[in-house]
Image 1 (cartoon, helix red, strand yellow):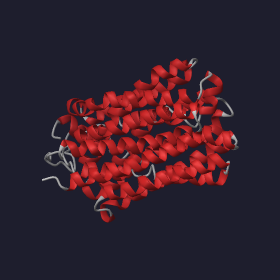
Image 2 (cartoon, one colour; image 1 turned 60 degrees about the vertical axis):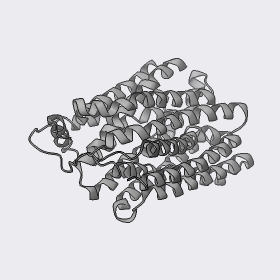
Image 3 (tube, helix red, strand yellow; image 1 turned 30 degrees about the horizontal axis):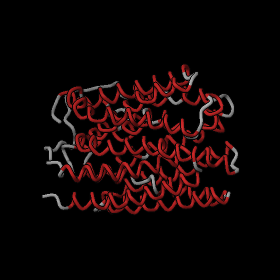
Image 4 (cartoon, one colour; image 1 turned 90 degrees about the vertical axis):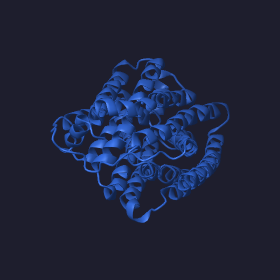
Length: 397
């Protein structure tokens, strides 16, 4: 990128640092959907909804993500990544305030969720442009890992919000306080200087064949569908087999911290130790599928320890691959990062929308045991798609 807007962008985030700024910005547009699952018990009681409707709320968020994602590349080129990130983070914060103050009916949340998802769908590719263009290649893996650690970090915060906020002053305060990252980001992104070039500007590379990106999009969609299903329903399922609501929230926080460590840790060493990131992604997706199997056993037999172990594996391992996945996508598309990530993240958004929606129906009509078995099967299918996509990328001319 060579526009004046691009030059301003890289310097504009210097007061905070490139990678932390991108991570906090992503956090501000991720918290709304992350709060739905852990606060599910409180939302059900307050708004009179069921597990199926929780899935609908998550699906609406990611439907907005998918619908807005194709516009991200054009917006970044037109206005510059800094302007796009600032607008989406401020918008995400205002939407959280709206959910807290106006969410008196279930349909109020349903109306705001897709708008919040659209902000996230536009923000992520713009943040990827930040990282790829402002950082040298040796630091890109760590930065991508930090940014992708935002999803489990937001779930960690949401889990902690159950005993500390939702069970004390109410779920609305959790949504209200969740707007703080947006406020922090908007303040720390204010300073701009215009006479500096991006650190790592490279000419655009050709995209892999469209079929390679489509297959990777499919793999990402399947993998995120089972991971989002776990995060959406693990608290409600845990409470039904004997966990207390506060303990279930803490469980989400603990297993999400494992995913945070996995994403940050793997990102930090990826540039040195991981030559083919998609292979590692495949192994982690299969590990997450095995965790779903443990969840099924723990649920059917009311074995709390097995359930907790399954949650740790399904979330910590099965949701820890995202940083490596986007590192592989960005690394194979230097100079075309926004376009490539905009394509593949459509799958992630669609999968994250459809997973809770479909498995919410399964939970209501069958059981949570059926949910975990089905999620594990989806994880196995995702691993096969990742293998196929990796081969197509490796065989590009």
